[in-house]
Amino acid sequence: MKKYILDLTVTENIRLHSNYVLIKLTQSDPLPEMLPGQFAEIRVDGSNTTFLRRPISINYVDRKANEVWFLVQLVGDGTRKLATVQKGDIVNVVLPLGHGFTIPATPETKVLLVGGGVGTAPMLYLGEALLKTGCKPTFLLGARSANDLLQLEQFGALGDVYTTTEDGSMGEKGYVTMHSVLRERKFDMIYTCGPKPMMMAVAKYAKTADIDCEVSLENTMACGVGACLCCVEKTDEGHVCVCKEGPVFNIKKLLWQI
Image 1 (tube, one colour):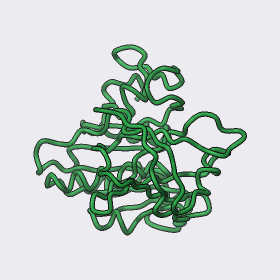
Image 2 (cartoon, rainbow, N blue to C red):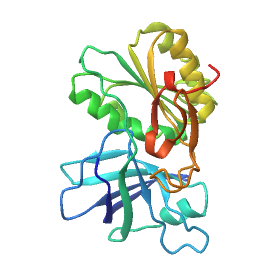
Image 3 (cartoon, rainbow, N blue to C red):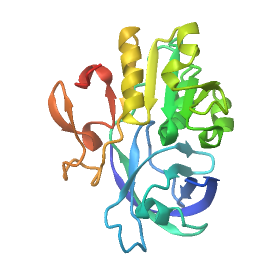
Image 4 (spheres, helix red, strand yellow):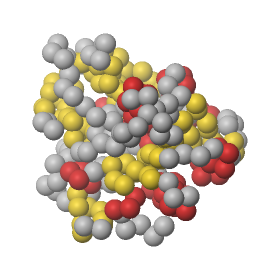
């Protein structure tokens, strides 16, 4: 898929949480095709400490508004600076990068989308894409507390939403792999993104239950095109760059101890 270097204009910067912002970007021409699971490398301007672009998952593509959304977690100088952009500012991005999720061929496929923390970001665009094919998605979203569960209204418009929180402030208390929906319902396909321990636990559940599963890895991706070798992952085909061969992988290809 063709990659683009674009100067996009900020239409909104919404503070969802003390540690998260939702940045919406547009341009005068129609935005290029982007697939669920792909990401962008975003340049951080005006920072004395950040020299590399930041890899951010594509959260959603609003074709009616001609906007691409990025859910940004404030974890360092780069993302904190990026979070200060205002309406009308120009943000330089390289997109779309990587390979996205596999969309089932049959609408009868029962799909579960599991997201943890900022790993819920790519699940929104994926959920819409699945719904357009006739697969009504079920979402299982985990976070530390109720305040950390983001975009619940948008997820709820696409399918059933189940939640877990570590402190029990919303949904079931505990981790996503402990949720009762995994015992009560049968799924044909699982997609997941979030902290690696969470994804490994989901992958282990999927393997035990003989359910096909794709994970979106969050390895450090400095260049986005497979040049810097920062994001190498071991697979059944040897070492590969997550930014180029992923970030989405079927768990059968990963050499995780599951």
